[in-house]
Image (cartoon, rainbow, N blue to C red):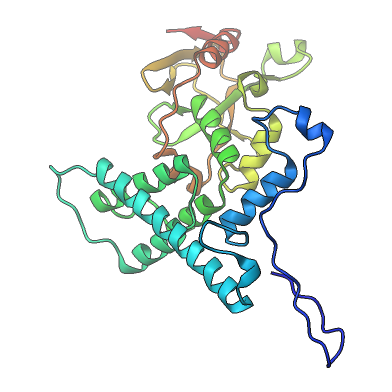
Length: 297
């Protein structure tokens, strides 16, 4: 709530609070689709959410600034309480009754609920519920650093993360996921007859453009640079596991290595929460790409 400056010592005036009465409709708004609210209507809706506009039994125009502040704070507390109750109820549904639970670390528990009360989106609340359930069964899986990142994660960024998981795989027997982008030829006779030593996929074809990768990097989920596996043993087959589907290939020469993006430690922890369906088009495209210099098993 913004107040005006005092015009004089003799007459002190306070700016009237915002009311929720909409302005008269203009011809353009009358002809618009009634299902789409105007920007002003959206702003007024925001005022109600924040406790800055009129409601059934509350009129800011008749309340003092102290009363308006108390109303706004109470509305916020009510929303925080509702958020916690929703997350807790969801967590109960995910927590099994046939395994032994453990006491949560008091500091972790305090920070968790302090952050969780600010989570309003239903899908994000579901993620927080899964974290709480997992920690009760097996504590230490999710650090406070991961929780802090999760509080900043928007629904749009979460969708990008799901896209990334849909094309993520485990290399050989490793437990961590990687986003395979292709491979590189490091030497040999073929190396001199190719315009480029790199052979890769355009991830934007599978819903993950470079802008999304940069967003996930900025969110602390992906490392910025591409990584390499190191030169592969031509006598040893490799496997890329996408859940039930697995790509198995053997390098045709001793000058090949795979390139990939890697999740950060925070990203690795968050990977435990989501169970994205693997992108079959990506799996097929990656298999065809590898067939140029790898043999099928």
